[in-house]
Amino acid sequence: MSAYMPFQREFVPGRFRRRLNRFLVEADLAGETVLAHLHDPGRMKELLLPDAGIWLEPAAAPGRKTAYTVALVQHGARLVSVNSILPNRFAEFCLKRRAIHEFRDYELVGREVRHGRSRFDFHLMAAGIDILLEVKSVTLVQDGTALFPDAPTIRGTRHVNGLVAAAHSGYCGAILFLVQRDDARWLMPHATMDPAFAAALRDAYRRGIEIVAYTSRLSLTGIELGRRIPVRFAGHE
Image 1 (cartoon, one colour):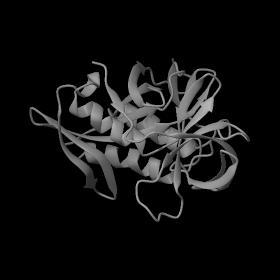
Image 2 (cartoon, rainbow, N blue to C red; image 1 turned 180 degrees about the horizontal axis):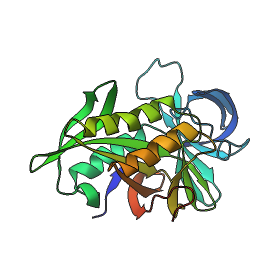
Image 3 (cartoon, helix red, strand yellow; image 1 turned 90 degrees about the vertical axis):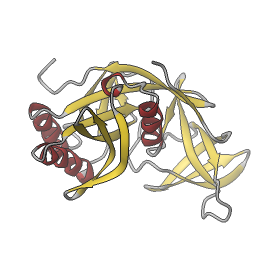
């Protein structure tokens, strides 16, 4: 089943100038220099290039430190979302509409569910089966390979290990990698960037944690669920 979620506000076009820190960028908006919030702390060096076209979302709350949030980046002929909050919202939208094939038979019964030291995005249930689902945002694609993470993620490794621990308590664990672009053919853990996360993900897969990856299609008006892509590990097809 297809799923299309429209954006809540119209974006305004600008140009990327420079990144001041992990969460703040300087942009050109119709000849005026403005500051914009960046939700994604990843490196995104292949996306945030000087003078790259970007689309800014006006802040919903008046008086915020930055009047805009960077929503999309033009990368060649396609748009890429750089909002790490969007995948979680879109995943919830898709789950409620049973658009993700692997979870179509499950009810969404909880959000931000704590287990052990971690808090997981969703709790799904069907016929007495409980799934803890964690959603990860992916923006880096190289030669058709989606790679996660694009910066070391201690938190991500803790989530993966937490799902394995939850499986010993009677839960089923699952990870959904949502690629915020449409040009990936498969997904791999980025072992060069974060060997600890790559090792944890491989171990989780061997222990029965379900690992699913989907692409998405972005436009200036919304996001649409793309196709499922295979997850591969180094040295294995």
